[in-house]
Every structure is written in C-alpha cells, then in structure tokens.
Image (cartoon, rainbow, N blue to C red; front, top):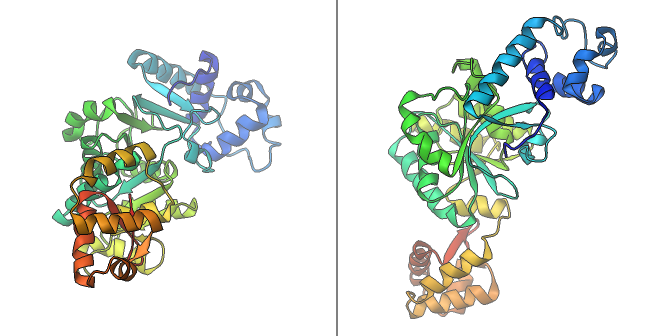
Length: 372
C-alpha cells in the first residue's frame, strides 16, 4: 500500500478537488468517474459538470478558484519533501474493505511499511480512560488472536487505542494508526515515542492534509476510516456515550460485524458495550475465539502445526486423550467430551481450561471446544 503512481498533474488535480469545501468524497468520486479523471474535471466547463445528476451550483461554487490549485501544489511539494506515500481510491492497493464504502476518502496519505493484501483486518476502539479490566483484555485478546496474524487498526489515541496497538506490536502483528490530522505531527504528543516501533511493522494513515489540526470534528470524520478499513470492529470499553460508539454505528451502517466486550452492570466504562449487546448492535466478545468463530477465520495451517508439535509433548495422559478425540471428531460439547473420554465433568472442565492455556484447544460459543 502507498505505491500509487499518479502523474504529477493528476495527483495535484486530486488534491485540488479535495480542497474544494463543498465537494466531499461522494461527490468527488462521482465527478472523477463522470469525467474520467480528476484533471479532466478542471478542463471541463462548469455548465457540463452541473448536468451530472445530484450535483448543483452550490456544491461546485468556486471549484475553478486559483486558491485550490495553489493549495494543492503546496501540499504536493510537502509530500515530496517528507516522502509521504499515498493511495488513490481507484488503485489496486487501496484498502479493499474501504473501497466498498461510499464515503471513503479519494486519497489516503500513508507512512510506514504495511501491507494489507490478503490480510485479516480488524479495528479495535474504546474509551480513552481504560480500566485494568480493559488493559487485561487487550493483552489477552491480542495473545489469543496472534496465531491468525491479523492487522490491527486503531486510532493511536489514549486508552484502548494505544493499549491495543502496543500489544499488537509486542506480539509481532501489523498495526495501523488512523489519525485525525496530517502526518506532520503526532497526537497525542506523548505517543510520539511509539511511532517508530509501529512504523517498523505497520504505520499511519490519514486523509487529512499537513495543515490539519486534531480538532474534535476531525476525530468523528476519521472514525469512518477505522470502521471501513476492517472486516469487523471491536469495542473493548466505552461509557454510555463516546467516539467508539460512533465508530461501531458506522461499522454497522457498512454491514460489518461489530463486537463488544461485556462488563459488570454498574461499571461506567462498560455501559456503552453492554448497551450495544443489549440492543443487538454487537456480538458479545468474551475471548478471541468468539470473533474467530463468527467471522469463520481459520488459523494458518503451518503455524497451527508448529504449535501442536511444540505443545503436544507437554500434555499429560488425560489431555492427550481429549486432544486426540477433538482432532478426530472436530468441535464437541463439554458433555460429549466427558462422556467419550470417560471422565467426570469437573475433571474435563478443568483439563480443558489447562489445555486452553497451553494453546492446543480453543473454546467456542455454546460450550463447544475444538483442537487447534
């Protein structure tokens, strides 16, 4: 991603179009598709553009003003100087899930070394005031999902964002910070110290120019990219109101799966998640297994086999019996495992927990278990 090769004139035309106040991404795409390119828009007569269905004179007011061209040239010069890569919405390397969103940016600015092709991608959001419960879940979730090697998208903000991105980095997962400002700065500034480690295996993405500040409305606008880039969005902790709930709503509007981590009824920063679950706007997420099962993800075979070979030698006789049964029969209920392996329920339950901790089985919704 970030290897687009528009000509200089075409890239400047795209930037010029971005700078026109009343032309948002939806209208911009309509204009580009109608005219064949961004540069063709500015050589066409205004009266011809006004014939396009759904486009009026107010929207195109000032589209030919020289200030837009000057601003575009200035931003282009900045991109060259800072070696900022970009991804154009018609390019093959444009994020595949984002391509399907009607309001996705026509141009994304990128920094780092990430690759989204043929990857499992999830977005993780939540409160900026993360609790110990949320911190523990972030670490455990990443640890559990690491064998599937997904890309983790978040907002690089305080709380859940930085917690999940640092955990992803720790376990060698690609992680991308979606910013609400240009790539010329880092917000919050205290997180700048994590930028280089994230760029080594991931990076940063934004549709904001270098002169954009982290204003409140920018964060809300940025949320559509976080929701749109991923196959599913996970909310780890949220108060009754908050930006992460906006992201969850946007993900739902894109027909993407939403997951929420439940909390105790009275906990302030679990209210938002509990409400999402209660209103059936999100699946309940108690472990990575819930997401893996509902998205029908499969663990990469080679890594799975390596885990099996490494850990099978550490299993005791009862554990080997259960593991062999699950390998042969596929996913099974707790009661069936106990019956077939001729074990008491309490022994089976505690043994399965130990095996889950060793990483050779995983629990699935409905008290099912399966071998990895």
